[in-house]
Length: 207
Length: 320
View (cartoon, rainbow over the protein chains, first blue to last red):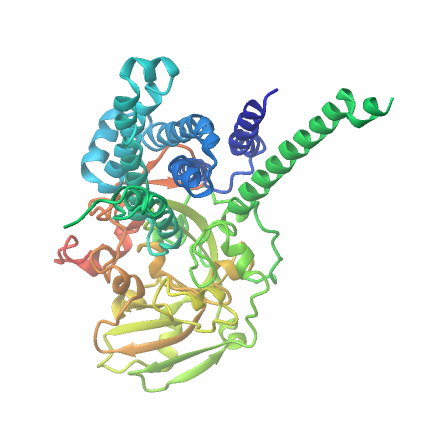
C-alpha cells in the first residue's frame, strides 16, 4: 500500500469513528434524555468540523508546504456533506416528521434554518462534482471556481450555529474564528501587496 | 556477505512498516474516540438525596382538577437529573450534572425582605419544616422540550404570609446564589450574575406557585436547583429560578436575567403560549422527553383553568 493510500485509510477510519460511536450509543441507548437533539447536535457539530477541515487544507498546504494534503481533501469534504446530510435528515424526519410543507415554512420563518439549509444546498453541487470524471468534464479552472462555494457553505454553517444558541456563543465563536482565519488567509495571499518569496524576483522598474 | 548485511531484509522492513502503520491507525482512532467522548459524555452518576416526607393533600382526581397533579407519565429521574439548563454550572445540558456534583447546600439561608412588615432570614431547616406536598407538574422549557416532574415543596404564599407584604408590594424579586467558587460557570460572562427572576405578587400568591425542596421523594439534586427553588408551572422553565437565596417584595417590575440578555426574545411574563412564537422558533409544539414525535403545547402549559384569570384583558402577544 502506498503512503497516499495509507493516509487516505487513516482519514477514512477517523472520519468513520464518530459515526460508529454515534450508532453504538444509539444502539445501547446511551444518547441522553433527548436522543433526537443529541443526534442533531452531534451530526451538526461533525459537519462544521469537517467543513473546517476541508477549508483548512489549502492554508495548511501553503504554510507547511505539504502539497499532498490536497489528495485527501475530497474525502474530508465528502464527509462534511455526509454528516450534513445526516444532520438534515434528523431534522426533517424526527423534528418535522417528513412533513416537507412544515420544513418549507420553517425555512421561510426561521433565519437560522434558512442559514443551515443554505449551507447544505451549497454543498450539494460540490458533492455531485467531486468525481475525477466531473473535474475533467468541467475543466480544472471552472471546477475550482465552482468549488469556492465551500466558503459560502462554511460561513452559512457557522451563522446557522451562531443563531441557534441562546447565550453561550463560545463554541460558535470558535468555529467563526477558525473559518474566518482560513478564509482570511486566502484573501491575504491573494491581495498581499508583496508576496515575500517573490519580492525581489521580478522587480518592476519605476521612474 | 558484508554487502548483504547492509540492506535490511525486505520482510523485516515490511513488518516494521506494517507495525508503524497499525500504530498510527490505532493511535489516531483512539484519539478520535476520546475527542468524541469528551464532547458527548455519558450520564453522570447520581448521589442520592435525603428522603423527604410529604403530606397527601387531596385524592388524585381532586388534585388533577386543581392542577396539583397531572395524569401524564412521569419523566424518569435519570432524565430529570441529566438534562438541565443551569448556566451557573455549565451551558451544556448534559454537563450540568457533572459540574454540580458535590455542590454544598448547607448552611443555606433565604432572606425574605423588602416591602414587608416582618423581614426575616429563613434557615433551610426552617424552610423544610413547612408542610411539604407533592406536586406533579409539567415543565415546559422555552427551548421546546418538556418533562413531567413530581416536585416536593410548599406554596410560596405560605412563606410570603409569614413576612406580611405591605400594601405597597406589587412584585416579588428572586435571586440565585452568587458564589463563583461553588458555581464555577459564574466566572464566565455567559449571563449577568447573579441570576434574577420576578413575578407579579398575584402570580406569586397563586396556589400553584411553590418553593420546591425536592423531587421524586428526595431532596433536590444540585443540578435541579438545590436546595430550594421556585416552580411556576404555567411559565417557561427559566422563570422557575434555582438555588434561591433572596426574595424581595418590591413596588415595580423587577429586572429578570433572560429579559436583560435578550429583551425581544424573553419577556417578563413568559407564560407558556403556543400562539406566541419565540423570534427564532415556534412554540406551537414541544418534545416531551422520552417520547418521539412532538406534542401540541398547551396554553399556560395546560393550567389555563387555574391561571387564565390572572391575565384577563391583557394582550398576551404584547406581554409575552
